[in-house]
Image 1: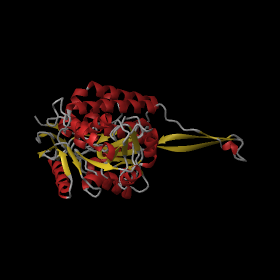
Image 2 (image 1 turned 90 degrees about the vertical axis):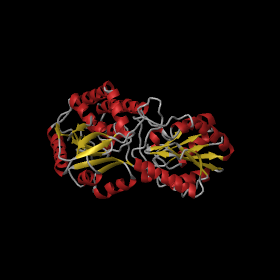
Image 3 (image 1 turned 180 degrees about the vertical axis):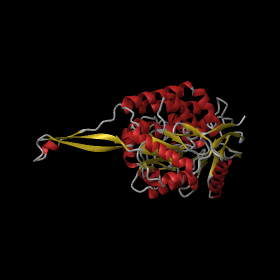
Length: 474
């Protein structure tokens, strides 16, 4: 049976005349439909969020209680939510279950941070003539937040936008990815059960060219938090005036395998974190720079690890690599592989596509101008690149316009910290692959990978404004 979902606006479930089909990403069958928002629905969602912000204030402790309850309800509904992510995103079941746990933790940490929002004292009395004054800052919410989330983490990346926003006292209008909207609607159901007042959380579904553009042009939205392509992120920056932005954009993560690395550890972790969710993770390993002295050993052990990965039905609890988000994207990735081969690259494994399924692919003999190397591949494709000199390797890494996260494996602490200082990324993982992330840490990139930070504490800083208060005691 095809299930139908409605929009969630001002605490009401709203249907419309148009719908969006949601495909089961493995079978490619329509398994759900979602009401498609038009101009009127988007306007109503923003109006509802603005009115709620102006008329309803939730205490810090009440915000804590609601967010904590959302976290608990997520875990209670873990199996149902995970199965939904398997269907609409094609994410393997064990990875989908992991996403639910992470999302619950994101809400729990945001709940705790709601009780810790504070300013600081300012010693204005130290200035001549101000001896009888005192000053301090307070943090105030910015207002309506427009959140635009991607398909690859349909719950946790939504959580990273919504939970800190509510924790800080803001209201939210969310546009989830049209390919994976049902999980966000289920989150609205959870918020309803948790007692969030009407208007604080609204979900509108539709294309970026319609819903996204309307949100972008509405000056009632005071902050935009967006995860997606650098192209769309730049458009948001150019068209939202002086409004605040949190942008989590593209990447092509590098990992360095130093000659003093623990090769067994490096090969296993790199293989695990190159192909999770078919490489459709912003911090998936894409470029592996291996010192020539250990290249043969690393390649052998890396390939052994890759060949243990199970590819296929994401409903199978043993599956490691499921389908890509669409057959169109799988075809695009396959074309990039063929293009690299035509330019001299060689396949160590993979390269075979069946519908939306693309086998884990490892390339060697690549060069830095190939698209599989210099652009964001967002597919289960990894290139192994030898190097001799660390400085030259880092220079080549830094030629990329992206800089989200990277990694280095080495037993030499001096080499580790040298790379941490020199590689231009927002986060550098030592003796781990680039895909390491826990949800309380500051997460964000440099260059074309965006600006601003996620992680509940850090997003709350972005989603509040500091206000100075001065008391004249004379």
